[in-house]
Amino acid sequence: MGQRHGHREDAEVSETELLALVCCDLAAIVRGRSLAAEQLAEHLHTGIGWVPANHALTALGPLAEPNPFGSTGDLRLLPDPATRMRVSPSAEAPALELILCDLLEIDGRPWECCPRRFLRDALADMEREFDIRVAASFEHEFQLMRDDVPVSLPFSLEAQRRAEPFATNVMDALTQADVRPERFFPEFAAHQFEIPVAPANGLAAADRAVILREVVREVARREGMRATFVPLLNPDEAGNGVHIHISLIDAAGSSLLFDAGGAGALSEVGERFAAGILKHARALTALTAASPVSAMRLQPHRWSAGAVCLGRQNREALLRLPPLVTLAGADPAAQLRLEYRGADASANPYLALGALIRAGLEGLRAQLPAPPILEEDPAGLDAAGAERFGLGALPASLEEALGELERDEAVRAWLPPLLYDAYASVKRAELAAVSELDLADVCRRYAGVY
Ligand code: GLU
Ligand code: MG
Image 1 (cartoon, rainbow, N blue to C red):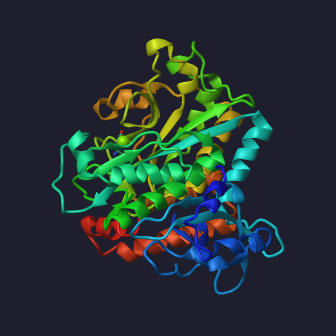
Image 2: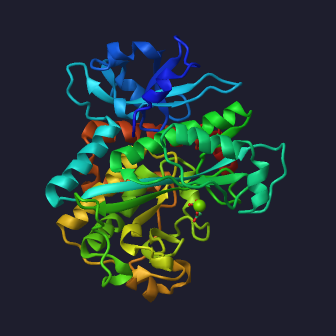
């Protein structure tokens, strides 16, 4: 992500403009502390204070009890200057300016629960062991919570025009924030929209996911609305997915996923990587579909992900090979990517992408056999067909997913023990907090959070 120093010269930047130093926690909530922007230089190398127990805060407010941190310890939020972004002020609000931080011990050692570090380590292992770099992008869906305009037809131009000036303002703000939005379009559900963004290296891609959510919510807030990325707003409607697109590339940026002769044009490296993700898929969902309402989105025929399998141009598959356009001489190699459809915005993007890479790495190390590629609706297969395609159901609840995470020793081993304990405490506390509510109420509760 580029620095946006250009904005520092803006006549409109006031001396007291606040710059937020933030991190994305285990519940995927962005938290931090702000200072006057011109004081950043004093804190660039030593950071500002932070508390370990903040990583045991649930998405519903209260601290998870018990949690492994308690009331002791101190950390530093260390800003990463490459992530600094700013969205200009509007009539309604001052500028939104933030910088993403790593979490360090006070003596400068990395903190074992820092999500950015988790992803950075996974990327480094891919590069060191297999000389593979990861490019990724997070494709987000969200809904505007409003009843002042009627619901328009899915994908209709009218739906987009009724969302103005939000649509134009949000694309402008995302461009200012260097998130590189590619498109804006209405989706299937009421007031639902999607914004795909350009791929970036793995860490920057996760940074962009964090920033995109904040910018979208900021622009909606300025217009008197709430934008929610809740995985499911209405149990009877389509959910809001976060599809994670992964490309494997070499040092020169050429695709290592593409092989024109391979099934689905997938190389052996790509097949092994995909097989690793499918092998650990059930445990992975504890990290990628991480709220009590997430599992309900991942049901057959919601066009999210109906089964654990690899599919080509198949929106019911957990892992999908998107189309390779050859029209007008377009290069298919550059387009090939693996689309993981099982994530949503309750997932910390660093943990989600880091875990997918760890799973792929296991597939590469074990040289797992190529997964078969499904081209039809998995729900239509009989038992023999399901077995042939290695189909499995996704966990039916977060509780089931956490059980899978606990049992899958490989996946657990990727997480430092303290991180695992903190994560499990946060998620179990959230489950307990909503256990008496019905699904529609839980969806509403989480719509106010994500
Ligand atoms: N809304 C769907 C989901 O929850 C995705 C639909 C699509 O864009 O394919 O993942
Ligand atoms: Mg979509």
